Image (cartoon, rainbow over all chains, first blue to last red; front, side, top):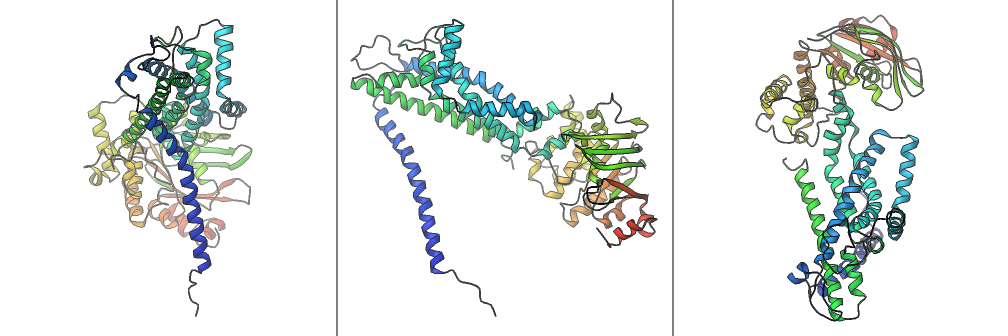
Length: 291
Length: 258
């Protein structure tokens, strides 16, 4: 008669050890995240008030307290919105081409390659490119829009890659089911494939936005600095939150340092709100909701 | 309703590989025709050439003629999309659209192909679900997702979706292979009812099923590995299963090979 083998002490020990290592690495990975959040919240709350959210830095002297980031918040929101308006349609259409039309063709392989190359572009280079091309060669002035162009260069590959992944996840069965009903390819894509992958694509877009919202270098070279409110992203220098943080943090007074922390906190909150919005949209559109 | 299909000299390729060779047959209207044969012999490929779904696969192409009521489906000016509206298809695995409710799934073919009034759609959805024997089970939850149904119900939902566009012909590619015996029986009963309205073609690995439901049966086979599949013989189902004229058919249905 055979007896069922018992777990040996040796195996039990290895199991515990590996379990411990997994928890440990998780804890180590979380430390920086928690530390950053804690620092930003602790230091940012000092100046995170109504004045900060509603006033600009205009006529605030070098050592004055007060002032705020309203001009930077407006700038960041407009720049990120414009960057999304440029890069999301282009990125999404590229992904649709790669998955639905170009499979295996030479053009799609070339596009894939260049998307990979674009993913690796350092953010300062995209800023330099817009500075050289848009501002120096074409002669446009510094503006929020120039900043948005630089940001959209950074956003596009992220949007393409995440949308491509999501479109590839849509089972081929669904496309065939739609074709078999006599639905043309483009309607299959717009009515079956895209809705099925909608929440995934929305999440990908939000991650891309979160990535560029905090970029400083491309803005530094394209939107310039200003202490005043400029709601027109198409003319004149504009501010952005990352620039605001950068600017304030390099000033020598404590009041400026406090403003920098509050600016960082605002930036994190904006990105978090966008993420939350994406989750809500994803949940609202999710097919499993009504089950 | 239900039209005759005549196939003559049909070859189908995947890139350079020839998957089926020189198939000719006549499929009678308002009857059930079964395709049987070993795996990889081209039954499904042939089925997919009948509604021009074969060419959806990159590199796949077809040579030869398929006449639906005398009209060549492969004539140069024929729109594949229009062919598929006339020749519906049910797949091996149930594939309801996951983002759509039961109602929207059935209405999908009509909605995605143009405008329809709400009352018109309501009527078609109801009759389609009734003809697929699903109405009583789902009438109180038409707005719930189709993916929440059981496998057998999902497959009947897919049949309802296919017949909602009022095709002439219904192609079924192993529609019961992922289902339990009770759901299989439900679908076989359904096929017997639907045959009054449609020409039905079914690919099946289950020979009892072919014998039970079909009027005529075609036996497909390969001459060897890598060779294209072909039709060994096609005859009334009762003859194929009792007195086939070819040795290969007899060997296959008695289980001596395959």
